[in-house]
Length: 237
Image (tube, rainbow, N blue to C red):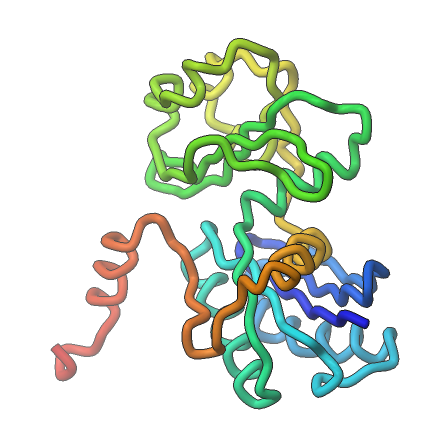
């Protein structure tokens, strides 16, 4: 039996899920600025619901980004601590892929590509294009951080000769509407239960890392580094 615990705090939403051989036990709530207070209690609650302990798990998965810099750090740090203490492998999962999978699961008849967009602030979006597949969403091209004005110049979008749907809060930028999606759903967030489903496929393929190698993916590393430099005390510089 495969037991995979999944966590995500990459946006204002906070979620935890346990994939017990395909049976999902999940908690999800919008908990902006309280991820550190809510995440571990939610882990305990999900494990209690499923009647298992951390030592029973086969792996821990997490939303590795892109997303909120602070949220990604919180989740990665907690996952590293849990996995290191229990000697468990870790499975990093794209938050954008999790959003695509969740939308496809909720819309069983939808068979057009999805352009996923999270607000990256600074007039940019984290974006990726996905197509439906049997168990996972297939990434077309690569994940990017880009100004919405230039998203229409993305090679993968230019090659797209069919209808597509826009999902995610990044679509609030008016310039995104020039891409002419079939329709847009802003209320789509990464959810740990979709991360848990993707993680099961990755675990079966042996795509795991050690706790120490479980790192967030920001896409905007240089900006994140500049932020860290600005908040360091002067006596550390």
